[in-house]
Length: 302
Ligand code: NAP
Image (cartoon, rainbow, N blue to C red):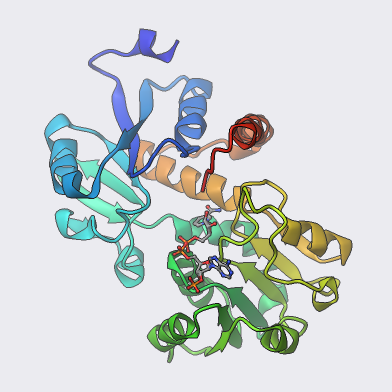
């Protein structure tokens, strides 16, 4: 239906990744273009690693206005851009490219995407401790966001591979907040989690198809009033979020970050605020349908 409206005036955006069939972004952006009656379109492009440079040259050559960048290109794309935002430079990952009359500028919207759902709790987190589970790419953006936008006094990074947690802690040390690294053991979880005001799951544990997985095994570790933020959004309500609810903690689902980072990219390309409050429920419903259909066919979306 959308293709009937496409003309030479239509602005083109999209996402590059490999594989790309799992991406939920085309649904999100195309729905919003339709809702706002904008003459824009968003397409998924499967770009193999060896074709990345050509794809970015193609963006410039074809006048594609904006691209999202996902696994495995977020770091490798940087040398092919003309400019990179300070955030993306520090995190060494770009997830959004803007084509400004041939000049390609890289951004990382995971940072504002993560921050926005937490902003209401800024005061509650002042001078408090956060536990970050995981030390991969998402953890890097989350730690940067916490240091930049919140006034915590301690961040504990807990990861299965201790060396990765140590490297991450080392990288952000000296930013005015104590950062400590721990291996993922029951003992460390018991010592660190109950005293944290914020717990963020940045591991892929709990993601479809292993939906019963949960980094925090015993629910007694979670406390009433704690904020429990799970970056995993497939399923929409993970086991960790269910445990958090049962304990009277405040759950923040990964879908919210997904929507917010998408809204941020949308604003960078179009200059228009995504009307998230008006379309959140519709998007949530449609994304849930897609995820459930994927579950029936064993499709893993991450
Ligand atoms: P990544 O770089 O591959 O890192 C994966 C992390 O998960 C590592 O810390 C890894 O530990 C840990 N891990 C994996 N399997 C584990 C297991 N069985 N037990 C314990 N730890 C395990 O991935 P990423 O890019 O950081 O993404 C992490 C998750 O965040 C994914 O589910 C992704 O979909 C989600 N995410 C969501 C959003 C959003 O908008 N909601 C944005 C970004 C990412 P090791 O270091 O020991 O391997």
